[in-house]
Image (cartoon, rainbow, N blue to C red; front, side):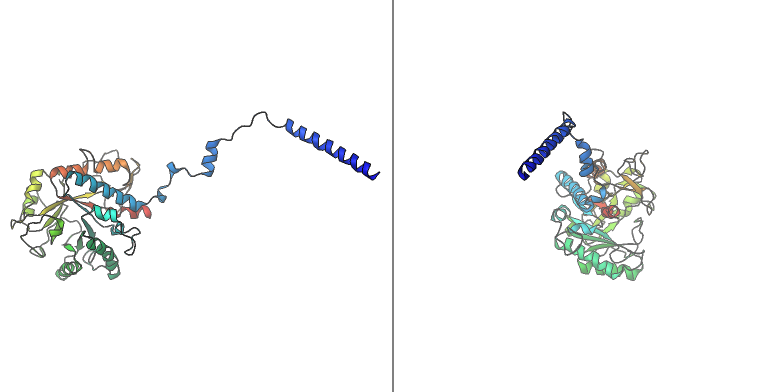
Length: 352
């Protein structure tokens, strides 16, 4: 009797379960719609096309920019000299002296410039804090020890400071210039002759024992006055701008500057900013402003008319080199011996 009752209960349960499954199947659609794949991707996967710039390696982007400039220049002139100014952190992978060397970058440059190493870091004609000096020098020494010439510009005019600047830099194995104005618009009266003056023929940056940094011509009444003032000097290297006001110097102008007054030959290097765009340059479009084109960033509060740029942008890089109207190409055509690249430390702006 118990067996029969259990059997009946089992049969009834089986019938109920079976009818439930059939009812469920009647609610299932005939076709299964696939989910919207684009919605799944947007929700669950990063969109690399819209990757925020905060995730970019700004230092490597600047290294790559300088390497590109170097490669292009040396294809045109194997002896062309590349000197980035500041941004010495790019010499190592992580920006510290104990980090591995950034060998591709080091191999692409012939010199490295540094401002304010001993004087001028906090203010003109003021000694730089020793801790700051030692940090910068620890990286500059890497350049020096790898055959890259170090050029230091200190900003001071007190004679004892000027003497100390030249002495301290020479002790480090650097060549230096004590500028009496941060505007870089004068040939200093002191010392009367360049430090380590010589009549040697300067064929490479490694031959140089001194340099002049003069990129602002405002104190000169005419191009002729400017050129004559340079002809009368015995600096081994002169760093000047391609332009005298709005007009580019000619190849004849540059050729005339390659002889010191004592008849030794010298190098003439062109200044060019690659980390900022300048609204007084020939390439500037009056329609440009911060954010338009999108690679133009905010104006530099310390230098009116200078705007930070997204220096990795192909459109900006095309302004700098690679075509007949590009800035570097004009410098090459004028016969300069090299280029002095400024605002290399623009990566700090984007990292901040």
